[in-house]
Amino acid sequence: MKNKFHFFTFLGLLFLAFSCAPVYKCGESRPSGFAAGNRLTGVVNERDELCELSKNQQETIVKLTENTKILNETIDSLNVKNQTLQGEYNTLNGKYKTLQGDHEALKEDLLKLTKNYNAAVTENLTQGHLYDERIKEKERRLAEREKELMEREKRIKELELEIARRDSIVKRLNQILQDALLGFDKDELSVEIKNGKVYISMSDKLMFQSGKSDVQEKGKTALESLVTVFAKNENFEILVEGHTDNIPIKTAQFSDNWDLSAARATAVVRILQQGGKINPNRLTASGKGEYEPKVANDTPENRAKNRRTEIILSPNLTELMEYLGK
Image (cartoon, rainbow, N blue to C red):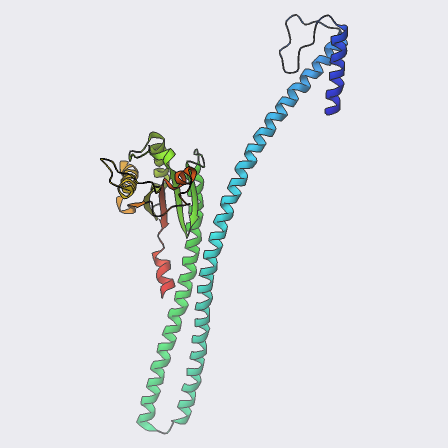
């Protein structure tokens, strides 16, 4: 391509040197009075085609670069999610192995009791009533052990079902991530998974004016998009947390950052509740003030990161926690 460009440049210079009419530049519209010989006209036509091809290729490169950036960000987010899920899987797998070990120990106990029982039957065959009582006691203990073993086996199966249910919940979280991010810039709205929960963080730039608790129109649009997702996924509890930076505030409406953060969280909850699509029992509003910063409040940029509203989605894992606590 470079050699062709030099070649056509040289032809263009020759044309300028020996023609009365100047040749227009690459990318410019052809002058209405342009005239040249057949050979030069063919060369200029080919040059125009190459210019158009080069322009299209540059536009393609720009689009590919933008797509590559988006794909890299998606990969980073999925890697973080994968690491979190791997840690949770390892924890559950450890619990599962512990139960398996208990199961094997019970089997050994049952085998020992069975052997002792058989030995006792042989040893006390001639002891009359006392022997019968002892046999009954052994049978009772053996039945209790068998019942306990069956309950442990049942619990292992239930735990396996809960692990499968947990995997299903994680897939649903992934879908929420994809839906919630559509149409919003990363510096306005971000989603991440931490400790088995989905954190949707919305900046003040998106949600509120400085020192105000009224949600801006763009923030309302974001919340309306999230309501649709929340209404279709009823297995998640919704906690809204307001956060501020460490610069004190004192106005006629708000005495401090506690008031401001709580008012903002409540304003978001009210919008989520509008329309009756979300059960109010799933909603909680919480003001955190300046006391849970994401980063140090040492620069204007970092303080802007700390001024945020977070919506935290917690899957209902009550049954799983009960099994793990037994």
